[in-house]
Length: 148
Image 1 (tube, helix red, strand yellow):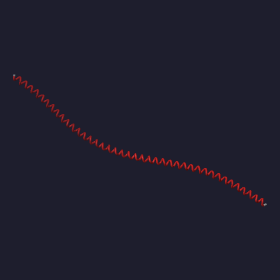
Image 2 (spheres, helix red, strand yellow):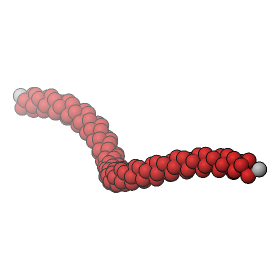
Image 3 (cartoon, rainbow, N blue to C red):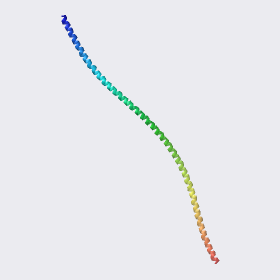
Image 4 (cartoon, rainbow, N blue to C red):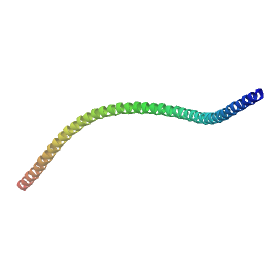
């Protein structure tokens, strides 16, 4: 009886051992699966970290480009403002020059009118002189005829 009880106890222990070994095998499979998942997740995480670093590098590049473009925009705005001021000065100067040119033209027109008046006077005088010359010759001819 004791041997049989011992045998039964051993069989129960073997069943328990077999159950524990099955459970241990299942747990080892789970552990292997979890390690594989962990490894996959680590690769994904490293890939994600690499992508984040790559994007941070791009962001720094873009930030530098944006600052450079902003500076270029400010420079162009300053240049544009300077050119507009220069254009305004040139337009103002042009207005002054135009007014001076108009005054000079008016002055020249007055001088021309005076000269034309003088030409008319000279032509009138020449005409009068011509008439006087004709008259003088006529008088001289008449005198010469009278003297003959």
